[in-house]
Image 1 (cartoon, rainbow, N blue to C red):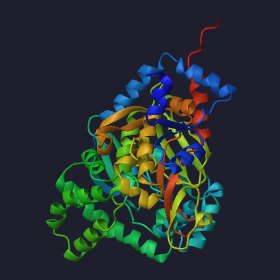
Image 2 (cartoon, rainbow, N blue to C red):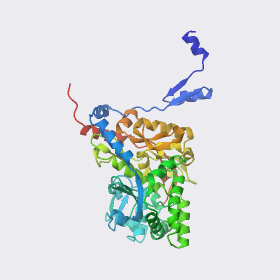
Image 3 (cartoon, rainbow, N blue to C red):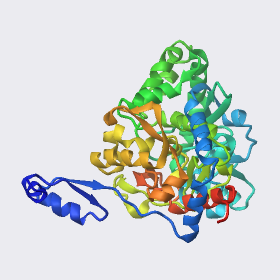
Image 4 (cartoon, helix red, strand yellow):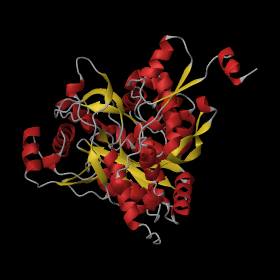
Length: 473
């Protein structure tokens, strides 16, 4: 039989690339078609030259192998819960926030709202209006959480009287910290600062924090990495879905809580609060991710992304081979699902340190393992599967500890590579909450977002500048 007759006698196998019109037309005719995600490379002349230089850097392969090996070797354990002033050495009147450093003048609405609420909570100001005046005067010290081995969700504001989780990697002694999760809706991290927000924070500092401290110290070190590994096999992806992780944590702490001798009413309220807050474990996934990625820092020649963070105005990344330098671009506004009557016009651009989850290979990178997440952030199950598969194109490794059952227990795509992002044009996928852009609003929805290309272009140019010069000729 000739090639032509074979073609006509069998069903076609169609692969589509690029615009969706061709795919849609075939699908409408019941023709099986496999769409392939394609994005053009980011390159212009200077960026193309930089990519060649980075790819030719003789240090790169070994540097990336070293950085990734360090990341995958981390075993994060929860060892304490303490006031931030004590744990982080914060002086009164100091406030840390999510994302790259930023001034009050450029701060987004939710970050401003969270700082105003934190000022009232700390007693530095008696009203939000007074707090706003003090902040505008420049009398308050602001800095990025990432500069202090800490991470904070959404606005990410940490003040001295707030309590933080303390995680350690025993082998290296490295530590990371994160505030306690307040829940959803009108909460400080989403920029709300009403009286109910302040009252909740005071209860968390007076009751919840001490109860968790005593329980963790009584229970001994809790293996957070093991819980993350299990939750990925139970339908959580570690960023916007942490239901099983929260319940597994509660299981670890309940015996010590019950036998602590604390008032039964306080215990019941604390257990009810944690058990009813599906996002509570997020604030342990985040410092676990911070521990992992900090281990991969400062390897000359490495193109590994070690941090992705947003302050509501800027999106910034840090790269192993370029030290503590932030490469920034404008934060993008997520697309997704909204609460109540809120809509796209109410949403602030992307905000929070929680993209550390994607940086360490879970969250939006591992959406395939949590198909139910699409009901919270948008998209569909097919999109979640395709997204996780595409993330392997821009990462350096697979984490054998974080396995995705639906992908035949393949390790999560880990270690975003600046060079691969620029070469392929594929951007990391982040799923995230959305804060109202007006200070005081709180949460307005949840959705999907990508970093701006500028971050990776800037990082590649810096890596090329630091690379050994290519021989002439």
